[in-house]
Structures are given as structure tokens and as C-alpha cells.
Image (cartoon, each protein chain N blue to C red):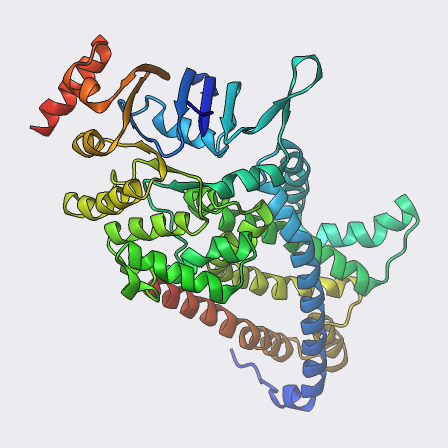
Length: 259
Length: 221
């Protein structure tokens, strides 16, 4: 196997007295789709945010596409923080989709999508616009290019959020509970877009509570609880024959809740 | 109670009021410029993530907010020459004193405006590779400015009224002109009434505009 696209070793992170991540190990291959499941507060979102260094972390190491994320080793074992410029380059290569969409409300849909390519990458506006319209076509929102986010449904806003990330031509995409704040009838349209991305071979990390979807789409499912990877494997195995008692307990509660 | 109003006096001396108003205007604009130029970085420092800029900005802001503007003016005008040997002209001292006073309030308006924008906005900006300054300029400030404008206009109205304090340092703004006029004419009732109306005429439209803007934006969002 080639070197993984994302490699996490012994990742530790705390907020004040609250130790959120307690030594996460995770490898993600290029083109792999990894579903992250676990109870609320288990550290799923925090872990994703460490991957593009939206959160700092205290311990462990993250590598993305062969480069360390956030820190490098200095003399006598001290960590040296990466420069802002290096972090920006890193973030430009990793797409992130948020639970609350976080679209820019003062810009049109098109404005949201071309913002990154034009302002961060310095692409000519005309070229960025052509590409953005193609992306909006792909997420089924070509007719909404000139609408403002506040006029869109949650599902439409999240699809714009995905298009905004894709516009940066990322090497991997992080999805932080992308459907958790949507009305049930709007979940499907977002999952469809993610499905098409998966088919196009995008490397994806998806933190979600959509068990049926993740069972169908993911190559591997990682169950996180108490800031640690408790169990991982192919979806068929995790969902049909979980071995760890906490996984069994979690899946049982999710299923009971669903039924 | 029968006071014999001599309102024609106001008309006779109308140019004195106009002259005073122009000066009040000038002092307001200069102080506002100082207030904005000092207030913006102060507000950014006050809301910064790092502790150091916050620790520097906070005492400055709180000092100017919790001491009287009049005392600050006296202090700058009379104490600076003794302490560091710098003698400022009355107009400069007033501009500086009123400017710094309003800077403290403008800093708070600025900080609160930025803080009112959802944190997800700067996360999203960061996640597509934007720098802090770019995300301020492109994402945060365009949204925050709207929320800052009504309190900012309010502060401007306050500043206009505060310029009357400059009369104590012999700066010829409206109040000082009015006092001189009273010394000449012995007509304080008429003149102070006219003075109050002059300020009303200047300030009320601002307050009205601020309210209209607020309603307009409330309707649009």
C-alpha cells in the first residue's frame, strides 16, 4: 500500500480541563471514504478540525499528503508551530463542510463559490465563474447562482457549502455532520451530492449520524468514543458484527432510536 | 411671569451662530478622525485572541471611558506641559482629548460588532485558506459594519455634544460663541435657547437616520 493521504498518530487535544481526544490513530488512503461515528461529544468534530488545523492540538502528530500539519519537531524535542502561510496552503487543499453550512450571507451563491479561487488562489474572476457555474450545475443549483443564501433551504445551502469547498479543488474533503441540522426531507439531496463525489473518487472523511448512508457509501467505518478509536473496519463488519461492547451499545441505541 | 423675549437678537447675530456651528463641525470631524484611527486598532486589539494585545487595549479603553471628558481635556492641556514639556494649542488639545475619549467608545463598538458575527464565518473563511486579515476584510467586517453603524451614529451624536467642553479651553465652538454673545447682549435666555435648537437641528437628523437604517436592515435580513 502507498503512503496514506492522511495519517494521524496518538492525537491528543483538550479544552481546558476537558480531555477531548486521548490518542487517536487513523490512516486514510487516497480515494478512501471513511465514516466517523460515535456519540455526541465523543470528539468527532474536534478530530476533523485538527486535521486542517482549525483547532490546535497538544499531543501526537498529523500528516497530510506527506507533510506534517501544524507543527514540526524542533531541537531538544520541542514542537515548532507552522507559519500562517504554510497553514493557509494546507487548508486550501482540504475542503471542509460544516454542520451549520457557514455560507457567507452577504454574498450570492456564486460569490460564495468563487470567493476562495479568486481571493485565495488569485484565479481570474471569469475563469473562476465558469468553473463555479459548472460546480453549481453538479450540485443541482445552477439556477440559484444569483440568489442569496438566506433565500435557500437548508439542503440547498449545504449543497452550496459543498460546491464552495470543491471550488478550491481539494485533495480531500472533511464533512462535519453535514446533515445534522437539516429537516429530514432535505437530507437526501445532500447525501446524493456526497454520493456523486464518492463515485468521482474523492477522499472523504465523514462524521455523521446517518448510519444507513455511511453503511452504503463508506469503505471503512471508525467508531470513536471518549476521544479514542474504539473499533474500526468495513461497514459490513462494524454494523453486523461489532466486537467492542461500547460499539455494540452505541449501535443498539442508535437503532432503537431509529425504529 | 412675563419675560420679554427678544428673539430678534438671534437673527441679528445669526452669523455668530453659523461661525460657531462651523467650528463645532470642524472639531467634531477632527476628533472623529482621531477616534476612528485610534479606535479601530484598539477595538481589534481588545477583541484579539492573544492575551497581550487585550492586556494593552483594555486599560486604555477603560481609563478613557471611566473618567470625565472634561477632566481629560484639562489634563491634556494643563498637565502635559508640566509633565513632558509639551504645550499643545487649545484646538489640538481638544481634538486629541475628545478624539481619545471617543476612540474608547468606538473601540467597544468595533469589538462588539466583530464579536456579534457567528464564529462559523471565520472558520469557513479559514477553511478555504484565507488569512486573518483577508477574512476580516472580505467576510467579517462587511457583515459587522452594518451592526456597528447605529451605535456609531449614536457615538457621533454624543461627540457633537461633547465638543461644547472645548469652550473651557477657549476654543470658539458654539457654546463659547454663545457665552461671548451673552456677555455682549445680556440675553442668556434667548441665546441658550437658540444654542439648544442649533444642536437639535444638527443631531436629530442623525438619530433619525440611524433609526431608519436599523429598520431597513432589520427588514432585509
